Amino acid sequence: MKITTKMVLLSILTFTVLANGATASATDDKATKKTEDSVVTVVAGDTLESIATKYKRTYVELFNANASIINPNAIDVGDIVRIPKETEELPNRYDEFVASQVVYQAQPVTYVYGNYNAPSYVANSATNDYTYRGSSVGNTYYQGYCTWYAKDRRPDLPNMLGNGGQWVNNAAAQGYATGSTPQVGAIAETAGHVTYVEAVNNNGTITISEMNGAAGFGNVGTRTVSANDYRYIY
Image (cartoon, rainbow, N blue to C red):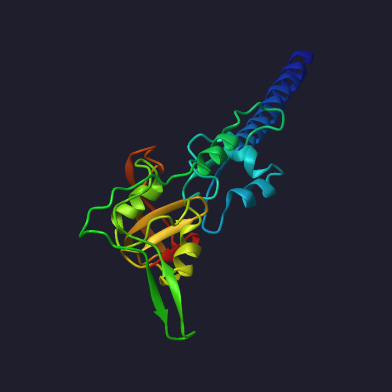
């Protein structure tokens, strides 16, 4: 067969088209990979800080970039975390969160004669001394906050245990049993937040109910979270 100049040019053109197509496909794959890398699915053991360190950001930047995260200290397996670009301008959600945590949540309570569980002192046989335990009457927390809901679910606990994040230490100081093993009916605490344990599951998770959590201020919602992320008051 006689090879003509037209056939040679057609072959070169066909090769060029195929080569360009392959290059475009590789470029598309790279762009897709880059898009996928901009979000992270939380797995067991992740914290916002560990994710931020891996992607060379700060946990404050990640919190500011993700409106779905209510508490920077409480992310759950399966949550989606978006990694912002270095030059991206972000809202200052973190300062608003910090300000909301330092609100003094106690308010006066009216005592009814005959229904007043006065502050008491609990004997400690191990140390042969007495531990102060505050009054548990009523609910002296502002309604709508996680602390109000936790006290409402556990009316036996004393008032004035502080903000969420301070309850376990303050309860332990007053002689209440605390620990790291989840139990149904326990108060579960993480940094800045307290919840109530509804169920302990077989896969290392617990089901909690909470106020001022993912459901928003003043609303009660439930979530399934890692049991290892919390400490407990029994």
